[in-house]
Length: 142
Image (cartoon, rainbow, N blue to C red; front, side):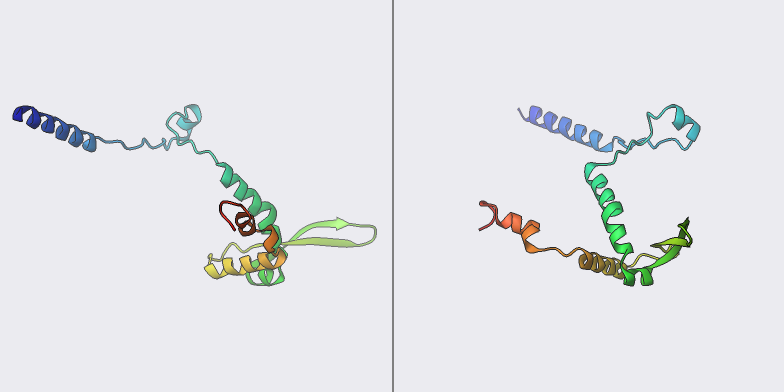
């Protein structure tokens, strides 16, 4: 009986040590672009998730246009780009828009300023907030 227990412990220990020692590294995609264009079997396939798509569309459609309209943000963090000239009946006008400066580093203060500008432009009321919706649920709220 003692031999059976000793042998089973030895087998379990050997199995665990063997499984821990095995290499399970991921194969990196080839640096050869011609090979990757023919066979993508070893290339890392990365799909964008629904939350990432939603966030990207919100940033592009809502956040950036709202921030670009704020005068303080324009003055502090953006530069003006001249756009396409439009010829109306007798006058020529140049449309301009503001874009982020490329040569600046991101700071936390910049994010705080932009968030404050967004909140000024789109105030949130209590009745449409998620807090109100959760509190009105019978199980979670009051």
